[in-house]
Length: 167
Image (cartoon, rainbow, N blue to C red; front, side):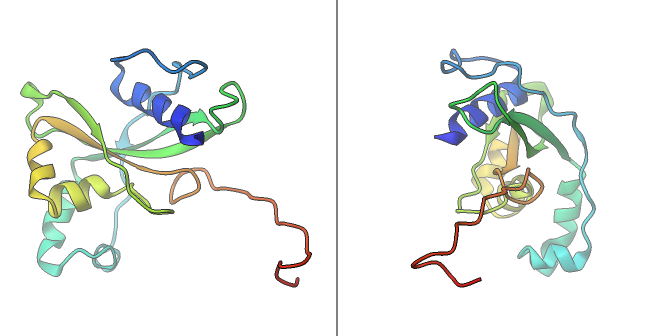
């Protein structure tokens, strides 16, 4: 439930278009990302992401097309005017900009998985169908709340008691 407003705001900010009215209480003034270059990764880190040695050069080449940014969204859809958090987003631009149709956001799965590099790892290097979609669509990845480059989660510790670990 918390993700509904965050994803609506994210979609509005990333596309700049409203195909359907936003849900009641959703913010339509979510910050648009300021796209910048993404962090550089060492070969060791790239291989640690599961990229085969023969794909490292392709990973680096595709990373040159990846842009990074953040979007401010409400933490709780039940309180759209309340506390906001940053969601880290990436955009792998469509390779055929002249015939570009829009953007597709891909969900990293999980729980707790980063989707920041999914446009490169899953869309461009490991999935031919997704790579084909990337010809006409920007592929959007993101780190969910509390994961990777997005705002960290600060959960209060439960008080000690029956069934809780000793402190």
